[in-house]
Amino acid sequence: PLLAFVALASLAGSRRRSGLRGSLAMGTGGRPKSGAPGPRSKRLRTLLRMSGRRPVVLSFENTAEDLEVARDIATAPSAARLTGRLPHAPCLHLLQGTPALAPGSVGALLSEPYARACEGQVCDAQLWQHWAQVEALRWTLASGASLVPRAFRMRACLIACHELWRRRQPISGLVCGGVDVAAINRLHPDASANAGDAFRERFPCSLWQVVHTIASRAGSGGSSADADVLCVVDFATPMPRIRRCFPPVVLKAAKEATQGIQALVTWTEVEVAEGRWISSSAPSECDFRPAPDLQGVMLARNPFFPGDPRCRGGEHLAVIASGRFDPRDGCFRIRACWDAGHEF
Image (cartoon, rainbow, N blue to C red; front, side, top):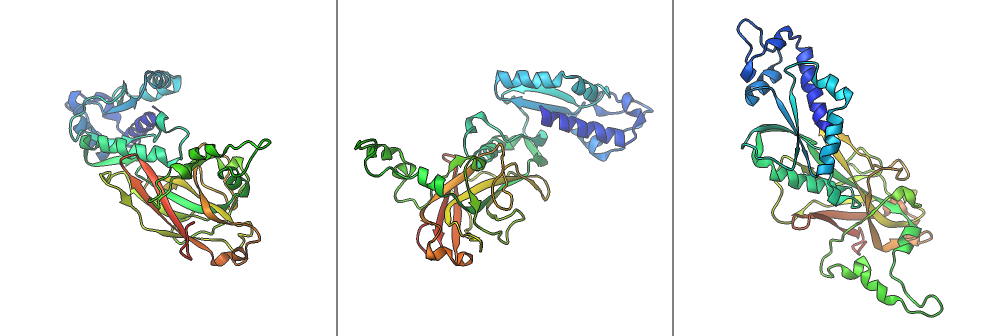
């Protein structure tokens, strides 16, 4: 509902900026009454002509609980001031689920990429799910329809996280006075992974809660510190029906990587306007700070630790990583290897 009110504010603002004194004399069908001037805003005239009446903003909610929250927001005093300012301001309709829409009838799709089913998963899971939702509504979009967000991209870096790496290794040896608990290793992610598939899954992690240090330097592909782009997805493009592989990128170790390299980390950025990317989980220069999103972590099977001779010249180390999206399960997996050729 908040995005819906952003759309309302934008449309109402365009009316105010147009200096339309005759807007109150608009008749049915979006046409001005005889003798009344029409809107000066070309965008508003087009929108009124497309809608055939007052523009309508539809806010879709998944559950009854979400619908009640939306109604509370819609009936708030601040919302009433916004929608009640002009008698011909756009209408806001709160709906549960997806109603029957006419083909090519939607001129703009504003979304908050969030699904409860993706809570607790890596942050990009919400965006792959959103792409699927846009694909399901694509037949309703008019030619040249605006999408917000427009696209997203996944960035990656290398980190040193010795304690995290150690805690997530399979159990070996006897524990608790000679008790053999090795059977629990059957639940380890590596044990359940497809042995013939070089692409591996990541696990969600709030990295700000564990000790870690960024160990790679920024590549030529991005503006964020110590990151390279693994994939870029434009929501305007159709979702593939088969697996889609993305070109490999090179993650170069920083010269200061004296603590080794034990994991590869991913996070996402969203394009809300042309060339404007935002992220709620990007790192600082040396680590990840508190954020609501969960980064995706893939631990190294052949890590480098402090004191390893290969780490003394850290600037010569690099990891070659490539991603693959599988539309069957909506999962993004990564294949990574050291520049020397052996598995990461």
